[in-house]
Length: 194
Image (tube, rainbow, N blue to C red):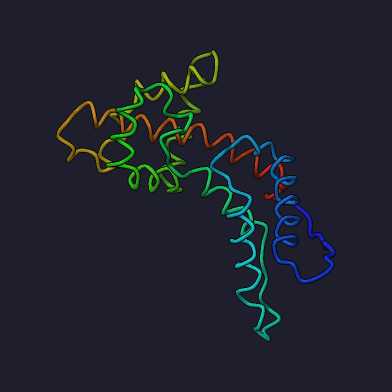
């Protein structure tokens, strides 16, 4: 991440936004995130602009923004649920549409909940260390074998249809595991831990 000064001539806001969005697209390209349709350079520009302008009129000089403040909107966009998500390609399209329509907020909530993400990640790392093979295949096998371990924590025990309960749990697990790698790439790319 870097701070840039972009010079503008005139007062044309559309031109100004066009250049800022081009810089954001370059930044996303450097992080290998340009292929993720769920990340919008326009939305990022709007959110980052709001973040910078929130305290613009304050005279408090102790206000600071961190890299995390700027990276978090990207992670939230990546964790959002939509029917085109590659995590859902293992399931029938109609089933995914129904599940996302009814359980989308539950999927979003749990895929962004730190404690749950940590538990699934830890469990998967142990599962993977005991087996060899392709990461994608192992993720699918793990979700199929262990979805029932998370039903209570996900609040899905109240869902009477076992197939729906299984699909929602597996979608959440697959989404957590797939996003884990992408988020690690973002953190490494912006040197977040330093």
